[in-house]
Image (cartoon, rainbow, N blue to C red; front, side, top):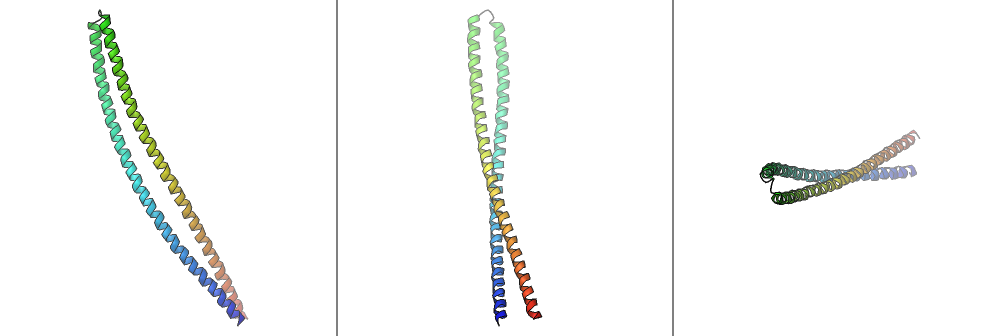
Length: 176
């Protein structure tokens, strides 16, 4: 009679452990689905960032094209200035005035270009920060998934050990 009570207690324990394992499996499935959903959302955000980056590249190409156009125009201005220099060699004061205007034009173009490049670098820095945050979130999710997988393995091993002990007890009981 006492052995039956012990056996029933052991069976109750096993049943409880089995229910616990099933609950852990369900929780793990839910966590995996949540992680998958978050990864999908991150992929969508990453695709959006890539699209934005592509858009910035297109804009940069347009800026480069405009810069090339400005360089061409600058070359044209240089040619015209050279022609003016040859024509007005004797008029030193006129030459000085043209030279001063040319320096201002060059400085203005340089300042505008610096501002545009600064804006592009700022945008790239923001994108890098976003990318780093996404990587950190993904790392945390991977660590949580590894922890849950390890916990599930430990519970499975505990169940196997209890099952083996129960079978040994049953075998001893039958043997007696």
